[in-house]
Length: 185
Image (cartoon, rainbow, N blue to C red):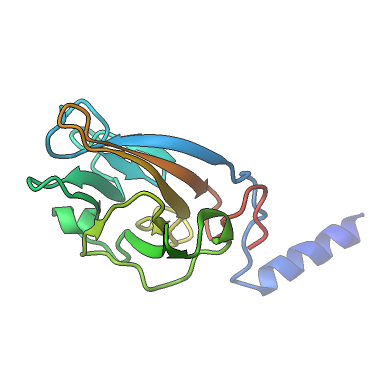
């Protein structure tokens, strides 16, 4: 027994890129965000991958993107850097994957890419659009976390201004797998 544990320890120490085993199961959820502009500040407009939930931007500044509706009534997803939040060594971003007309649908997105994320551009929101979301660096091992979203509904009524999203947020640091269950990559 001691010999086999020693072998495992030596193997893990010999690979500096080895990740701790995943411990958090990926699950699919549904969330809603309210527009940053045109709704009360008490409504959550931002999303924080770190928490896996909507956040109020007036009391939590570590959000990764916000939902907003511009004065012309156009809905947008906006990375935090694009709304004036300070940057870091790796900025949060969104990577478009598909639309209702084509590209990767939510269930087809199985692995978050390393790069290509839009960090300073607003992305027009439409029902059926899918995205991979990269957080800022939030893990102690110096890496971001990843999530995927699909826009399920846009309510652009002036008294509502809300977006509903299907979400899978991977809480395991260093893992990019975006399928339900315990990720292996």
